[in-house]
Image 1: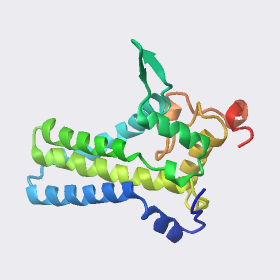
Image 2: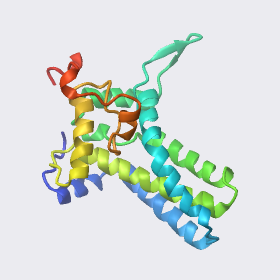
Image 3: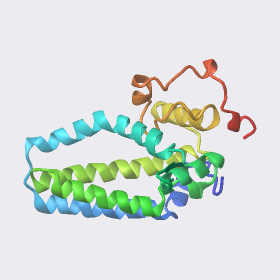
Image 4: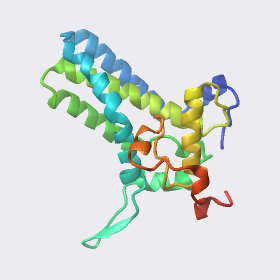
Length: 210
């Protein structure tokens, strides 16, 4: 992997050289500023992080399985192969290439616009929508950082990170049909039965010589 990072400081320096963390970070700062300016705090704002904490592991699982692991197919003579899926296949071919770890720019811009539209149009209060936007962007920053760090040579120190690190490494280097959690501790994998005993399943054929 380009830019191997044995320490957290080195990892952070390399992380800061890439565009998507900056775009997400700037969007997060703007969203936090807007939320503070708008004010209008209600008890319902506290429900947003609770709902996201419950739903995000399953959303992450669904996106990973349905979108990132999408296989090219033809519908009515039209080939459907989203850029996220193409880039993710490249990422699996070379999981140590740091350039393939981050969300592709065009996909990230689409996600940011979509999150903004949802926040402003689908919530009953602007403040509540901005609370949602702040938390989604914070999750996005956390996703990029965690996914990046797992693909470096930084060794896990905390038990939580060690657990996340092991799950995603199993997905890449054991069998890519299982362990779809990236930044969460395998909750959705356990519920949806994609969290097997590693010793009970074969290594994916494409991973044997990696």
